[in-house]
Length: 624
Image (tube, rainbow, N blue to C red):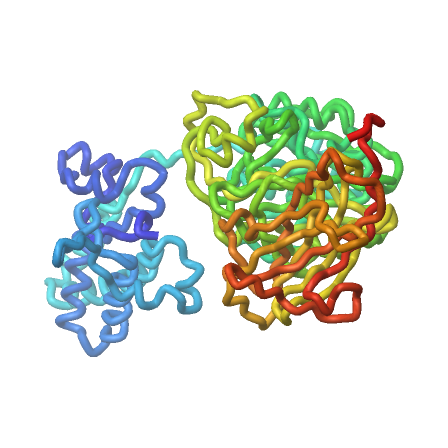
């Protein structure tokens, strides 16, 4: 915001590109620092003109009763246009007190959250209000001068004032123009009876949208998305879904992805389901234009026109909607580093993507179905809380702490388009280089991955995702449900158990805990797992704090789901038989178990019974 605030010298800093002042060598050096001669001039050029300023001051003095309100408006607008911190001569003004350097705050800093100002990204734009008020003041000032001038000189004074004002406010001459060429094909599709809207790609490029709106006057068809000064809360974001669905893999990235790849038939069927008739690709405004054109051609056939930098594809007739789930990720071509998905890369021999602070996932489902989202994930550095919103319904957040498979709470997937928003509640960390090349936990997690030591790009990294899938409940239980509360503070939702229960092998147990809403876990509890024989003898056990103490229970937030994967090695001399798998929590070092609610077996002992496990002899048949 400070970057697009007006400079204190801005009102007296003429445009560096003014041809008249340049020819007369009247552009001061400070003007080039205050009003840059690049695209930022559209935001930072706040020059009022010396003559209008002089006339405005004259009016404020000589006609103060008539222009009092306009004077106040001009002063308020001038102060607010300076933004939250004072800038002078192109630099931020700072003060040092007790060794601490800080900027000079201005009234705008106190009003940041007020209506209207809260959505203003560029305080310098308030200069428009200043110019409006100054125009009125200058008119009054000129009127006073004319009244006090000989009648024969009045026309000369009026014309001279206008000429001087226009001359010193001139930014560039001649004014640049852009020819607008309309593809001939637009005239062919305008009167057509076949339905279908126009999808303009890319959806986020402003100049492409301007041309797209102009072209709409020729083809007269509905369009997806359009040009808005502020993003609208459109839900579901059909244009964003289609943009991601029709985006090829970035050049240099892994061609496979973290979601099932859509086929050409999938893309065409989804386009028909969303009533897309034509796709316009504005090639000068996209990266990897050849790859995008190749992908669109596989789905829709050759372009009907490529005139004037616009490749136009017609969606062919076919099935009205896909017969299977179709996934798409938010296209990050135009995203800021803090948003969206990073390019696909390889971890553990599988494609993976880093998510920044937030990202969108789209799933088109041919029918309504219940299920859950499953994925493998790894946080960058510290554990992350992941908020998941499905069709604007918030699911319980997940704690992402280690490189394992996570399962969300069950939710309904509606027929048609579903929009899933993922948000790293701990935000993301700006990072330069490849995390696979260093860092203890990340280096271990990516030990089978290819390090890119020459990657010098800065990315904002939050959570690494892999193998993202929606698993329908109809395929079987996503976990073995338990739903037992311990000490009124934490609930064991369920568990999964994998592995061969035989001597010398390991059991892989994943426990799904959830902190009870409204209850505060002030103590740090240790999670334990016991495998007991019929005589109560301990065959195998695990004891340890969550994530080896990195994310203790005292940090758990009510409602969050915490998944912990535990490896339970069975001794090679284990006797075949039936064993009981139990879990729970206790405090250390006094070893006080959390009481277990309910009437499940062993509950009176502070143990949560999971299931009976039949352990066999050694898998190779040898005697221990």
